[in-house]
Amino acid sequence: MAPKNEPSFRESVDLMFNRAVALMDLSPGLEEKIRVCNATYTVRFGVRLRGKLETFVGYRSVHSEHMEPVKGGIRFATGVNQDEVEALAALMTYKCALVETPFGGSKGGLCIDPRKYDEQELELITRRFAYELIKRDLINPAQNVPAPDMGTGEREMAWIADQYARMNTTDINSRACVTGKPLNSGGIKGRVEATGRGVQFALREFFRHPEDVAKAGLSGDLDGKRVIVQGLGNVGYHAAKFLAEEDGAKIVGIIERDGGIYDPEGLHVERIHEWLQKHGGLKGYADTHFNKDGARLLEAECDILIPAAMEGVISLKNAKGIRAPLIIEAANGPITAGADEILRHKGTVIIPDMYANAGGVTVSYFEWVKNLSHIRFGRMQRRQEEARHRMLIDELERLDRYLGDAWSMRPDFKEKYLRGADELELVRSGLDDTMRIAYQNMREVWHGRDDVHDLRVAAYIVSIGRVASSYKAKGL
Image (cartoon, rainbow, N blue to C red):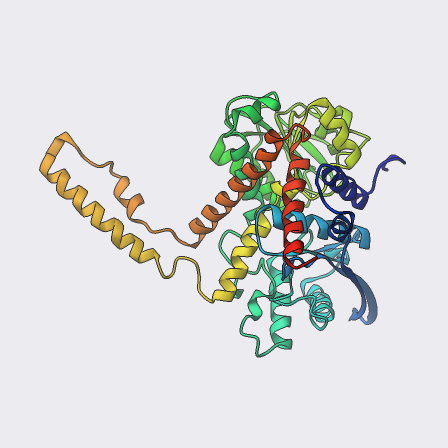
């Protein structure tokens, strides 16, 4: 249970917003316009299941329409409420502005435990929820574009896209009404891994700046860094997998809802993920020590802590015990405003959620563009790129024959250089570029202003400034 003086998630977002705007030169009217949520629609609908009528409550919140369409996921969870959805919609506004995707912020949620229903029942519920939103233009390629969130995935997005197409039979851009779809329904390669991949790219960019790494009391690169991941869902799993396999990081702790496991020698992420998928929890995994009080592992010794599940897991209750010098917020709002203050005073460096988990909305943007252009990335230029590379290879091979043993190409060079980039490589390249530039924009404010002492305030200043510029351009 949270302490009495602990701010709610919604209050935490507002407090962090206020910290930033206090350092900006905005008129009170414009400041209020950016802060408030434009509209929230609450829907209550019935679905006949197992011989009786069940009523469900859902929300779709639009925070800012300084750019349209607005963008944000739909989550299925029992704790969904209006305050949470509005806070998440606000974060989406700032996130989209920070990584320069041309969207306003939105969010949706349905109060439901998806584990209690079979696939056919979930489809009925999802389609009815989508119907209620679609008929009010709260799902629309040009106005409001949802995506997966906690408790939803490709399957639910495919149902929503199909429901929209059934209700809008002449809309040629109907597939762009939602992102995060399966590949055979208009999805894009790299979307499932996108948020976790974005966390990896964010950490890589952070470690490219020795001055920033030193602020966290660390040195070197990601190789050998001890990492604890809280939540091995889609985001946490991909972040842990890529950091371990590609960057040499050591995953020493994994926390899930039924407990946590810790091994200073490192954990096998793939095996643990397979166990989790099969058994629904970590208990019984034999390779290492299991602790049913998983939350205690948040305070275990490590170099990097990755909260990748729910909001508010680091609060006034446990902030003083957190030993990680670097925290990257893969989830939305995992650190409350009160805990944020404690950690900052301790010298902990926090890479904020609105930047760290922006990989999902970035690749969603790529998918939306793909759906509107009706052509996959790389289809037009890939073979032409290979043909140009072939000309260079042919010339190098001629030189190779002329010089003999004095010079030769590496055996794998020809194959690697000749291959044109496919959709997945282009998506990863675009995501990497986005995460690098966004970090550099935050960093410029962090290091360039004497009154900005952390990355979160820097991120808010960059994003709020861009939203303000959009409103001013509209004449507000």
